[in-house]
Image 1 (tube, one colour):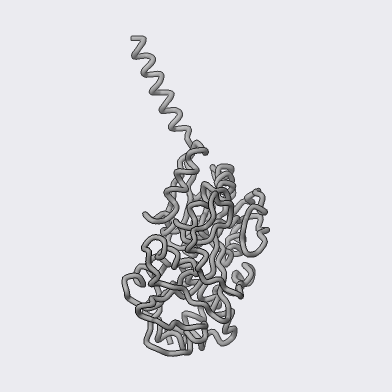
Image 2 (cartoon, one colour; image 1 turned 135 degrees about the vertical axis):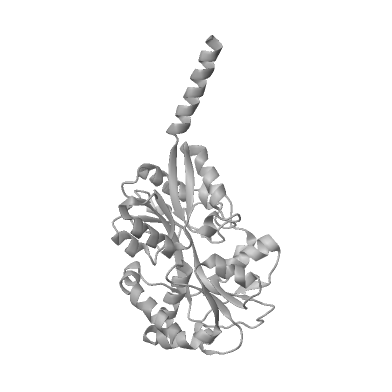
Length: 331
C-alpha cells in the first residue's frame, strides 16, 4: 500500500510539473523550421534552459506572417513573431500589437546601428540575383542590364504581397528606377518565368533547373559550396548596389508568455541561436557566435553600395508601389 501511495504521488508530481511547463508559440516562416532550417536546433538549445516548450507555427514568408498577425489582432496565438524585416517594422509597430523588447540593442551586430525598441535583429544579408553558371556563363552586371538587356535567360521572382524577398526586389527596383519603375517592370516582364508566393518555392524551382536565375541572397551560394561541394550557383554583383535585408523578431504585447518571449529575444543574440544561422538559415549572424564563419563566407559577393529605404518610407508607400507592380504585370 505504501509503495502504491509513493508511486501515485510521484506520478502526480510528474504530471503537475509537465502541466506547469510553459509553451512559447513562435510564428515564423516555413523555411526557418524546414528539415534543413535552423529552427529545430534553436528550439532544442533554448528548451535546455527555459523550462518551456517551443511551439513553431510556419506561415509562409514574412509579409504573410504580418498579415496573419494583423488579422488575428488581440486574438493571436503568437507570443513571438520571428521573420519580419526592416521593410515591415514600421507597419508592424503601427498595429500596437508588439511590446518593447527591453534588451541591450548594442549586442546586435548589423551593418547599421540598431536602435528599434520593439524589434531585434537575428540575421541579415544583401539581396542578389543567384544564377546557374551552366545555363548562364555571363550574368547581368547591373539591375538595368537585367531589366533592359534582353536575352532568353529567365528569372524566378517572389510575390511582394506575401514574401519579404519579393518585397525586397520591388524596393530594389523602386530605389534604382524611381518614377520609372512601372516602365522597368514592363521591360522585365518577358524575362520572368514565374512569381512564387515565397522564397522556398522559387529556390526549389531554380535548383530543379526551371530557370537560369532566381532572386535570393549574396549568401545563398555558401550553401552549395559547403553542403554540396559545388560552385555551380553564384550571386551577381550589381553596379548600382544591393538592397539590404535585416530580419527581426518581436514579442506580442499582453501575450501570456510576454516575459518568456523577451528571454527568447535575449537568447536570440547569443551563440545558442546565432551559431545555427550561417549554416542553417544561410544568412549572416546578427549576434555573438562561438566560432568564426566558415571559409566559404569569405568568398561571397560583398556589395560596395547598400540600398535601403527607412521602415517609415516603406510603410507609407508599400501599397502604392505594389499596385504599380501589379498594374505593370497585367498590361
